[in-house]
Figure 1 (cartoon, rainbow, N blue to C red):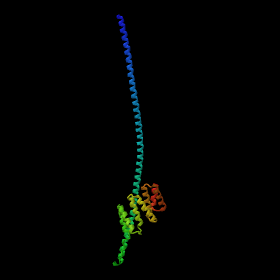
Figure 2: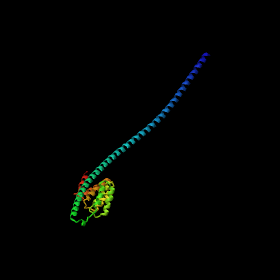
Figure 3: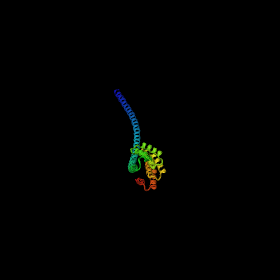
Figure 4: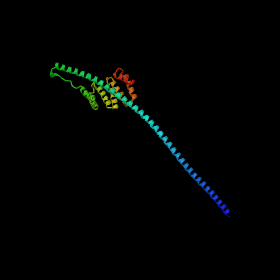
Length: 259
């Protein structure tokens, strides 16, 4: 009896042990499956994050390339602007140097003519009786000199106004072409290049044989260059050389075309 009970107890213990082992194995499998599921979820998340990062990196790379291209473009534009500024400054410098030399040439004959006029007046005063002396006054030169004085001190608006008044009051004066020329130069100095071109073209059309006509064409070319009409400026310089080949302005035009 005791042996049977002992045997039965052994069988029950064995069954309980097998069942426990079976139960433990099933729980481990469920846990393993759950972990594998979590791993797959993590792998999916990592893949999505990697794809998003790759897209972000590609986007940043494209933006960097676009910025690099824009920077190269801006650098090129800066170089072009720097060259244009330098050319403009050189042309402005040449203009004022040329203007100064012309002013000096103009002032010297004026001084000589004034001296000669004073000498003649003194001689006439000595020869003729005082009561019979008739003084011939204004031929327009004083008005012209007033306007020219405004130009020399840089009061270009006043110079234009005075030169226009001179043209209205003395339309047949020999100084009319010069008045037109200095009006055009006044506009040029004020950087009103279109007005400068209009005035100088009127001068050339009305007085093609004037000594100021070649200089007016040179001023037109300078104005065209300033407003970036380079083809027109080149044509004007070539026309100047062809029309007035022996003038000082033609020599300057040759130098500009060579440069």
